[in-house]
Image (cartoon, rainbow, N blue to C red):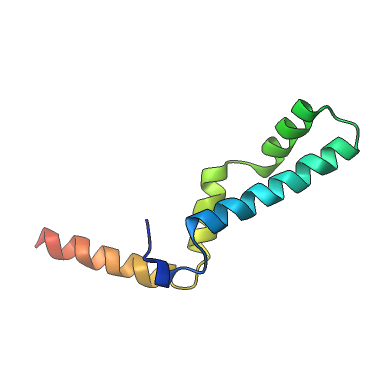
Length: 81
């Protein structure tokens, strides 16, 4: 669900940049352990997990997510009447 900007702590771009930064740190850590660049990236992605799920969980952690979810549910049920 896409919340209005004023209901979110960070934009999708900011969240993507934060995820990328975490991945880069893990890739660098893997490189420091002696992995090749391709192996380091693959290992970092494997350890990080599904990017879409991480983004969803970050949005769900937003304090106003529940308010937005209730609003969406109310609009859905109003249309059904």
